[in-house]
Each structure stands twice: as C-alpha cells, then as structure tokens.
Image (cartoon, rainbow, N blue to C red; front, side):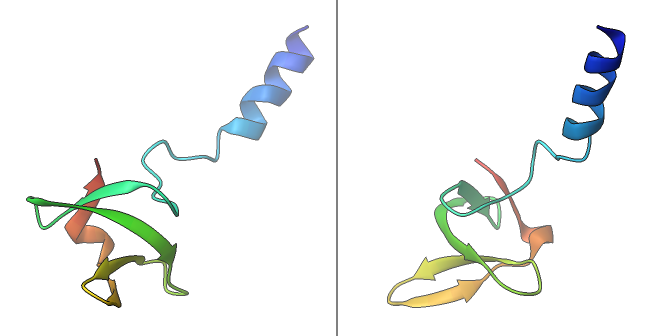
Length: 64
C-alpha cells in the first residue's frame, strides 16, 4: 500500500495546478476574459483578438 501511494504521488507531482492549456479561460491584463486557442512554441497562450490570433505573455495572464 505504501509503495502504491508513493508511486501515485511521484506521477502527479510534476503537474502545476495553474498551468494554462487550450480551452481554458484566462484573464489578460487584469480586465479581459479570453479563451485559449492554443499554445505557441515559446509557451505563450494564443487568444483570438478580432479575426487574428495573438500571443499573450505569461506574465500578463492568469487562469479565470
């Protein structure tokens, strides 16, 4: 039982609860809620701004 519990903790320990992923709602620049359409190769979330996709720096957004 103890080995099984230790294995479960090791497997789930590397996930961050505030990780942003596609489909999440995020707050950008402290006042707008947007949906994440994807993640850029540099790690920034992509949002739709009008008809174009835009990157938002991770420092300027948080989960809704």
